[in-house]
Length: 312
Image 1 (cartoon, rainbow, N blue to C red):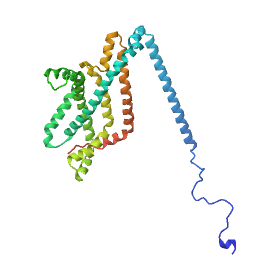
Image 2 (image 1 turned 60 degrees about the vertical axis):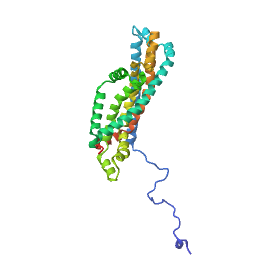
Image 3 (image 1 turned 90 degrees about the vertical axis):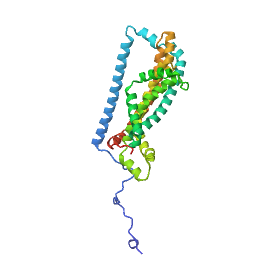
């Protein structure tokens, strides 16, 4: 049988295009796209150089202004003495450990109590009206009274009652005052998160047979906490800084240890050391909050426009 009869013989010449590109062929940007990309890169480089240059200029100006001031040498010896910083560091670090313990305890207790107040305040159960009224009054009072005043009232008022079962240490009373104040702030944060959950979520959960308690625990609260994670973390960072106020009640925390060291040497460097230690704790926490807020910002936008609801 001839070759033509058995089938078509291989043909030399171009192969018809079946729509597939060769593996080596890729997308090539147009000249306009390349020009735009080059312009963006140049603009980013220029912005980076301007930022670096402006920062160097500002730092240099501040350095010259500070170091050429008439009282710079005396200020340097009084606030930036290496020997005084080294001598006071162990006591201040030990005091900072007390601040951190107060911060952790106050954060945990404050979040639990704040969540409880928020759930009570957003509930529409008629029998809980007295508790709702108490929650509203509590939040209004402790958000309106300065923390320093609460510390003084708790620190000097409760010991005057002479209750044998009540601890009277400065650390305990200071932590109690911080808990009372920040519970009110955290309650409002959680209430905002609960009200950001759309009412349809509650209705759908109830239609599936979930009770009020199950709806709150399994549907509302998980979404509410996700919505307010960033402001909640910001409040906890503020609580960490305010934990230094317990020193006014005699608790030997970082600030009180710095005060003791400064009074013995008549040098203010221990205060600077205490401030640096607080910054070493608060700045990383703040940056974590900023990063999380940037990543979750779109969720906050959706929660803002989704509507408000309450636990029914």
